[in-house]
Image 1: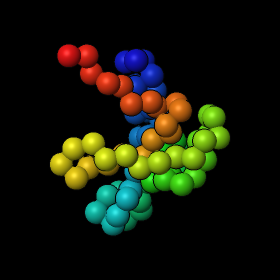
Image 2: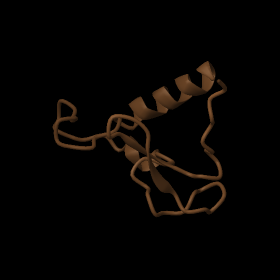
Image 3: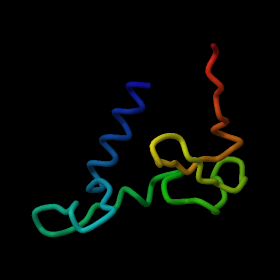
Length: 80
């Protein structure tokens, strides 16, 4: 996991990071373009790249949500 995380971080830095608004720009005023590489963020209603199922937005806590593929990222029920 650590090796893959490092690879993703290096790739993100090479592409200037993600710039979801005008606050995240470099010294030349340019935004990053790593968001084009994201597999789930902001893709609600689009097809999953892996299994072709429709991506859905799922709420989790304090009015927060995340876009997921219900097939590739199934909800894990905590053991009690």
